Length: 332
Image (cartoon, rainbow, N blue to C red; front, side, top):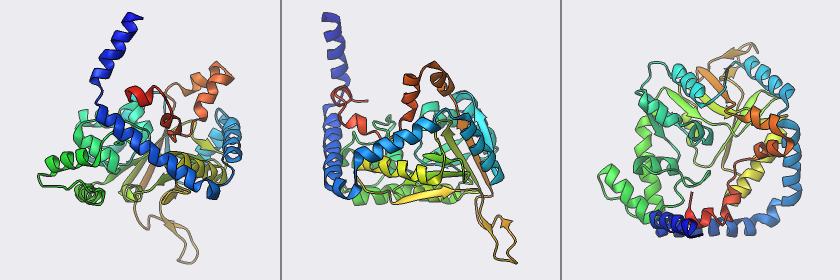
């Protein structure tokens, strides 16, 4: 017991109390918003059970996965598979080619494989376009939450980080800080020819990727000359309707909002049939859409046991962390 207590005390010394307090305050806001919006959201238990049912018949359903792959290819996606993080990083680097600048949106899969670090090591500058991710990228911090990477920082700490980076005074006012980050990433968005995003869900029937966001940055990122999506083999859903139900639940559990500001549904390159009703591709960017499916041990989990496979039912909302006693005591 003495050793455990010592290890705990040593860990506590490394934790900045203010970061935990910022985190607690933000989580309280989320819980309050959930309580306020629950009557409008509907039967949370019923919707959660339906999403779990959909996940139970989708995760590990290889016929469904093959259907998704086939439909994506018919929709002119370039579809790649990676057995592990290293292979995924190498595939993406190959797709980037000679470009030395990439703009990127928030993606927990990319964090899982250390994509940004890998690309930086190979001479590619990666600019995060999500506000929270860009702030912690500038600060050199690790993300503290799946959907709120900078939740451990107060507005005052963020103002200090941005002021130092931009070499001008940024006041501790969220609207001013948001504007400062937006201005910081704008020039990169205009120059970059490659954009990388995640994908919250893949609909097999339609052969489309669904990406939810609130900031509007993902639409900008995916409109580069080449759009690279990184997702996982457990993200496949039978239909768009199934995927949208999950996204609605994910949004409510992550933020307390009834729906995200945006859901981008990407079903291939831009196309038009306005001339003689013939279908032509390439009206606008992107000129190429690439999707990488990551395994990274997921098949092994699915082959272990049914109980283990339920780990992959996770929709990535981060709601569990709001009440996790360990997370709220020692941090991420």
